[in-house]
Length: 192
Image (cartoon, rainbow, N blue to C red):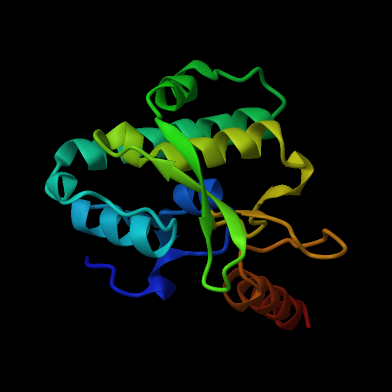
């Protein structure tokens, strides 16, 4: 299945690390991997994470393998932290140790000074470094009580609750929230 719109990408995480693990979705009871090809991965990296991939890695199966490995490391860390277990941080550190990053002072379009981040991209791990960093920041620096799993029983998506009252329950009110409302309504009709 070819992904060619951002609507297909389950962009409900409000965080790059969560959007990364949300590339595995459940449709009609089946888990679907939105990164089933290097082409789909590169599309996601560019459109969602803003990561440009060097041409020499466009046909690299290693890039896809490493991306899936990082996604699984991230998923496991998030589940471990949510369940209160000790975290196995070494696999993520292995990705972080391969990153090569520097800062630049530059002028933006308005001639204001800005600091920009740049990454070496000689290996799949270096291309994926911003996602490894996003995972580390989510695990170590963000308010983890706001990292939530969608409450719909059939949903596998995660999100960072940025709502004012922090009461968000669904990955998307349009999808899972409405499913929940429909189920409640049908139960009510059945008992009437």
